[in-house]
Length: 392
Image (tube, rainbow, N blue to C red):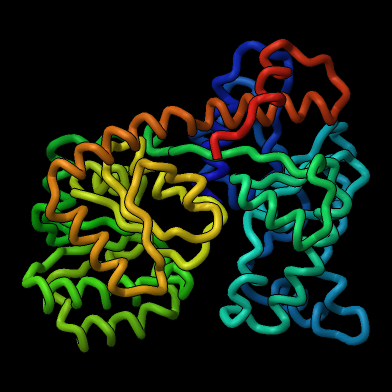
């Protein structure tokens, strides 16, 4: 979510040909990460609403209230605290799944319906809560956003939405908004993470659906079957799932060739894309796939799951495999790792594919939708963007 909002803020900040003002609604104690990317017509609007991730009594009180019968869970659908109404905004864009009730015309982005496709990964209460929140805001919004055509079909099918109400707005890569690492930075990164040359990159938090376990099994298969050790680096916050991944690495004998460095800085992430040989993305479900976009923009060849909206994103610019089939993952990874000519072809296709995905285009397309929903005059560029078929 942080990368998405950074990309949108950067894109809107660089628009100089309109008279709109874009306010990012934020909690005053949790806006430091976004401030560096706001400029031009973009600014902050602070809410009085309680920060949802706040620890302690307020968070506990809210969790308890949601569990009270008979209507406790309905408290999960928040009401506006009046901030946007007092400010007089014309359109509210909920760019993350959590939203609130307001009479201001809104755009809602549920991102994906993973809880319906992989229900075993969610508690019953979480599934029920998501359904309540997602359905409520999909019904109330003037427009619902998907990132791919597959995602649009999924929303229309499961929530019985009018297809005309669901727009496809792809995202892009935010790598180029991050600091560029120097040769010294890259050398320091190698030392800190104990990186060899080269390595396979998979940036992702260790959620179960990200399928790190399947990837580890595939790497062990490649080593045992083909005699090839492939180093793997997996930056991203370690969730509770990481404990089982540690045990798996020990069981498969992959400790020496696998790195889970945890959360890395934007500078370090850009450095890993510069140093990696290829990106693998074995996720079992995705609404989009930001690392794939980042790899395309960085000239890194890609092997990726053929699930949900990922084939729409990848096109012919990467190898596709079934994430439930360890042999397919292993075969794709080994081809990408061993075939230099293939890597060159895919990297070139990826660069061309990346030209279709940028947060400049995303920002301009959202601006056209903002203007349309607010009843403002549309420029010729707006009409062209709104009429253009999505690249995904």
